Length: 77
Image (cartoon, rainbow, N blue to C red):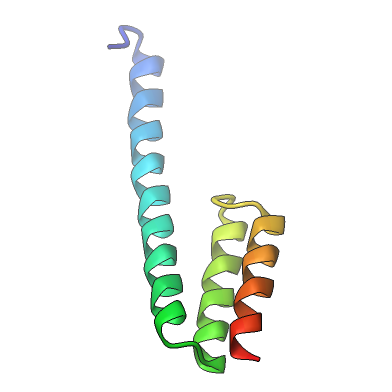
């Protein structure tokens, strides 16, 4: 455990960020799983929107989001 005040605060911030990022990733995975079960154009828009938000929050890389969107769009075609 950290002894210095600033290190304690940094630990708290890191834990909070970790929980928030994990929640976003879990939500993204569940939306993608639902899309895989029943692909549709509306579902693709929802997945792409969620991926875009994750990229904006620096949770996933933009190229990964692009790759996933491309692969999922093939299911709709």
